[in-house]
Image (tube, rainbow, N blue to C red; front, side, top):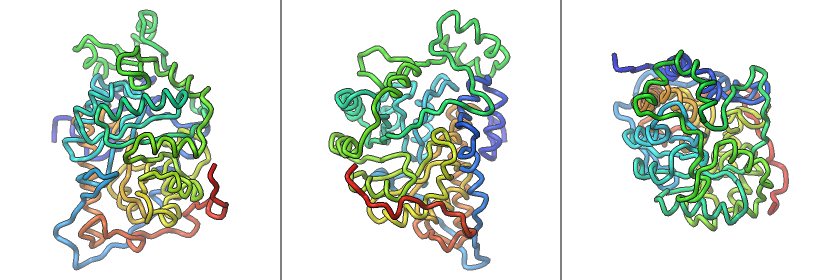
Length: 397
């Protein structure tokens, strides 16, 4: 099949690696320190097996569900990622692809496209914000997203700001002035398939983050906003409750990896939690998200929606996560590889690959719906789960 089609997310990543300059590709790979968590996020899925049936299988299978009140055609939603300088349409292309495939879009507060433009493209947009600045600034940021029509809030409150990587970090410029463009010109010229879409529009990659400020205010650079985030005192659980009250709608707390934190999130009034280690970009040595999922889902899954974010590369990964207690999964690098490989159609391709994999796994397991999946559908080896934080006393924080 032509037109840039690929059959797996792994193939999309191979194409992205060839197409993108190292500075861009390296920023997407990211990771932290030794990359233990980055690697484990994917490797852990391979440790889980399936328990399929040989007869009595279901001819028709239902993949749709809801996430924070939004109907989605498959249990996969777009996770918010930072600046997406891999394609001139950036987050708008991703949002359009998600809308075309019937799922929701998570838009990063550090995105390169304004929230108003993204929501117009996909009304099922969840706006993500970091704890950057004081409460007044955060409230204005949330209000802007709500005024734009965002249907939910994703709060990211934790970060360790570890910058070292054993394999080396890519050099990313703070802004694209003439001097910077001359410096990076060789990378652009040696990667014409990446540079051509920008050149045709007479554009350069946008390294600003417009959603950190007000709609009519100048957008800061990514590193300017990142620096402000570094020097903002981290939030308390009272601050999380305040965000929930201010938003007054569905709120997801992203980055939960402990049972006690999951319980505190419930007390704070969130609608959903994302079991996530931020793609291995935060504190290295944190277990894979799929390892911490089962005990968290068991502890709070009857009180809030539990999503899994981290390491999902195929539909069978989605099914394993659902069988262990997730309502749906969020994908990050997977769709970025698709965007890099083939723009909006590439993101749609990734979602199609995942949809096909979910459907195939349901068929083999004899399930007629994603809602029927449970632990009996997967083979979990001894010692697989990493549960912690279950015995501590849950306080107000």
